[in-house]
Image 1: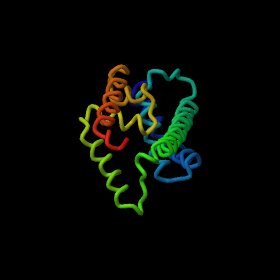
Image 2: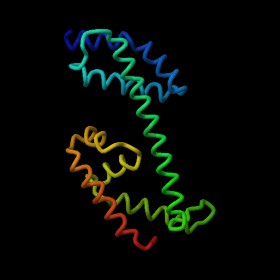
Image 3: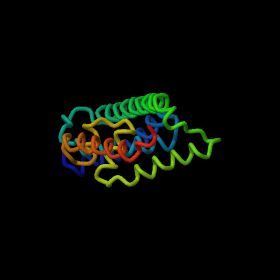
Length: 164
């Protein structure tokens, strides 16, 4: 199957993909995002398709992306809950307290001072991405990703030492 034929078969599944994505997400915007991610991944990994059932292959990709995204969101929530509890005394963030809002703004400001090459992997890690996923997304070796995340932590801990 040529690339053009493959893409035309994928496009012919568009409505079915949107319907399935909406059933998984129950949100029209998330469903469209899921469709886009699915088509992108299917085209990217076209060479792995074994010329069996294209529809089943693409729907499996969609289901796996949905599951991975769901797990990432759960991990991110758990991490945020853990960090909030473990640093509640340090940050003491309360929307009623102007001082804690200032502390939060200071943290965000320090985070934004990080070099882009360090900030982006660090942001993705905080959002729950795995090292491998960050490396693939940024097209960098895993060792570089680990190093940059470590650098980000180290820089933030140094610049925010007044909070501890």
